[in-house]
Image (tube, rainbow, N blue to C red):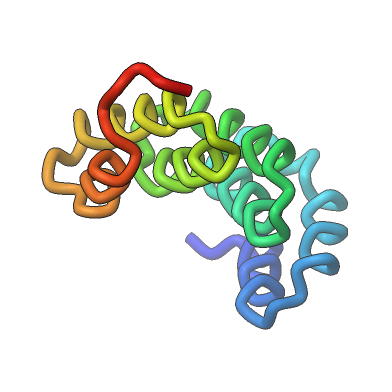
Length: 119
């Protein structure tokens, strides 16, 4: 089922029009506030713009609706890793591996950040 506003938002992101996409996304958020795909897209835009707090806000909202979405969990793990919060990054990776034990990206991240109890 095509949803034109989300299609337009994706096109803006694909074209690299991130700021415009954020403005457009904000204008339609009320109608899509419970749509995990929309929330993922908005979080991804913030991720691309290196706005960690806003990216995490949208990823967390998306995961409250669809808690086992591995793409969202992986981006959330990347944000946490970039912030130096390896404990949270590992937690996301473990959740991914619970759903998809062969997820190469989550395994690589776990190898990279280790499985210890540090930050």
